[in-house]
Length: 118
Image 1 (cartoon, helix red, strand yellow):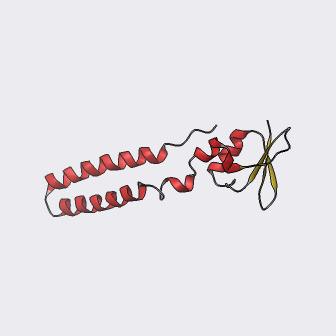
Image 2: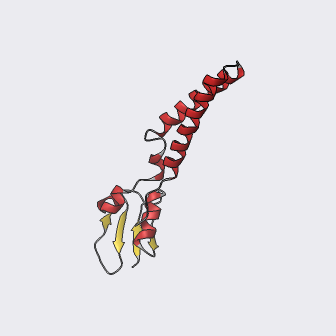
Image 3: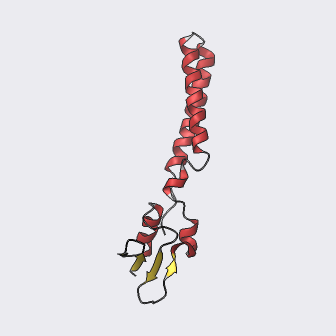
């Protein structure tokens, strides 16, 4: 079923609600935009749809949450590990490098998990 999205710039028709959700996730459809389902005459705000309101937008995922803190911690741990290894403290530097590897694996997995489209 087709959906029409009305923005300040104009109107655009999508082939399905899943396509509208993809546009929402990428930021092409905003909360103030209005949606019209094919066969109806009532426009509804995009943020009034629970599926869209719960969906995580891409721009909010990394820098809006705790990801930036984990990245900063990773940079600090990497610097410490490199310093220790260069100055001959191989055991402690190696342990810090293992902790850093574990942290980077966790951050990478969290960054690639995405909300499945409707």
